[in-house]
Length: 210
Image (tube, rainbow, N blue to C red):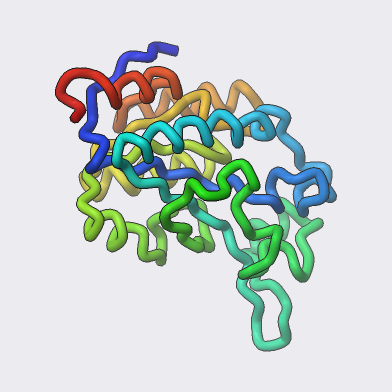
């Protein structure tokens, strides 16, 4: 993966971390209980946390999305039909608002400026993310998280449609299969810059970025 990337203004840049949550990644989380485990995804929190620390130190913003299963009037999670079919193990309490499972993974403690609840793949769909970014003066988003071909790809496309300068951190993302991850990255290269975490970190201190 090429590590060259244009030099963004850190003060106008947000790291957008997609769905690094306990119910997705913790050993006792919902997905581990259901056997839907990605070793590649499990390696992301420490790597992404280092990027977050660097961007914050340079004056940038860190935003995390939190997939949420809101309860209905009876307290049962409102799960989209396609997700219920794909992940039949999901049950009451999983990804519930305010729960440990919905929370960001511990590696991100103290690093996230804003957390945004979402109900679908894209971090922009029916959320306040765009409002938050624009009012914070953000024009560049560096996107990472899970999964590459789902939440990450949908968020990247919606960021592009909203005319944000969009950067994808290839080794800051993961999917359930490596070939799916690679295909999604190749696809996103048509609408944004694809780099790695080290390349992005180096770009923050490059001439013209401050």
